[in-house]
Image 1 (cartoon, protein in one colour):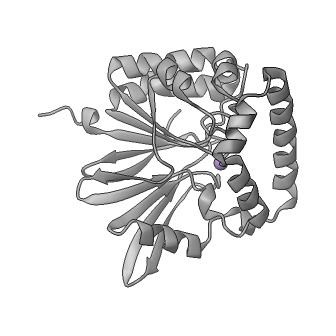
Image 2 (cartoon, protein in one colour; image 1 turned 30 degrees about the horizontal axis):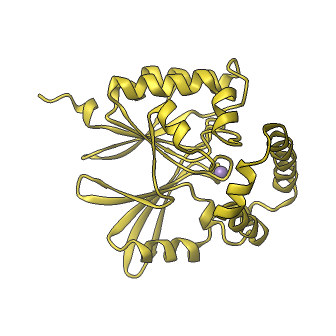
Length: 248
Ligand SMILES: [Mn+2]
């Protein structure tokens, strides 16, 4: 009998690893997850916000040396690693990829799992009721803005990063919960761009669940990943289906 675990893909999101805090429980749990679970999988997909902050490869590689090394060891051991940008970490470039062995994926990416097409994404692009956030997103994702930012001195980038983090925490406190969730319109538009996909997996909202949506005469499954606070959930994808697991 073939080793089923070798045919498994695992999916996680929103770990928000803390910079310069290797002893943080989340960072420690992530390292254990790589060594105990991901090592047995064929592929690991990380759907954004793996890092709480990424201000450029030069800074990030210094803030997360052990975590990067652990990813590299996992990649060397044979597990393929794939990552999508989140809204906290979208400035990873070549040096990050070389150091970690991680491959970057497009913001919307389709996997074939058994006989179904599964669309993976971070999910922030679906929160279209949050107009202010979507405006900011367009600015941050502008290649010229990113180029300019990455050419600022390290100390300046760290300062800006800290300021933005504080503002984001404040915004999260004052916004109501609905505008921070995805909209049905954005989901339908997404699926129209990817005909054939009947399953969507995303993170970002930190509201782990499994939803069924019905439109255009069809059922769509939507899996929302947890942020590991407190339940350390991940999905496994095999030819037999999609399952939610909890890691101790
Ligand atoms: Mn996010």
